[in-house]
Length: 177
Image (cartoon, rainbow, N blue to C red; front, side):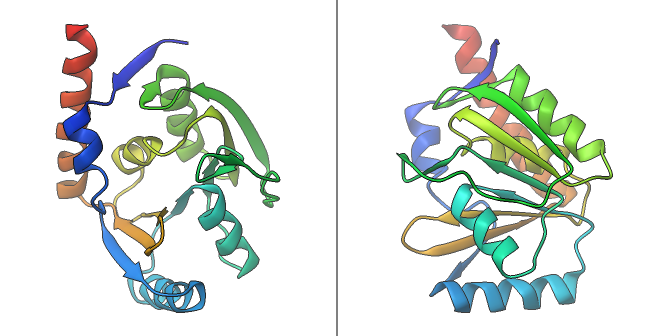
């Protein structure tokens, strides 16, 4: 396992800001608004990052093509999320990093036509960036914003470019070490 990207303190602050549209409110409110967005936009794929958002989507009959989980919520171990997937991939990805193993797993999962669950030993948060970078345009990448709601990132050429710049900064930091 080699680390491809490392998080800087400034990026940590920047990435606390939503990468896409923040839907605030109770779970029922956010889910309804998400379903309305999905109905209107008809995303080519839905990718969920995080245990709570993945579980809640599936519980409400929204089935992501890719779910990335770490069996933790707010850094506390939780019961593994039961998702109807055809393939499960296990990867290591330490906190504050993105490993080559996780990056390749996401790339491969996004090429697949079946539902895939990636289970991360470590932390999955930063893998949102890789999902946005490699997902087909017009996909939705959905993740939780603690204590606020859910964030829906509509994958566009511009969003991919923004993420590529963030990753370039992370790569430069790793090379400098």
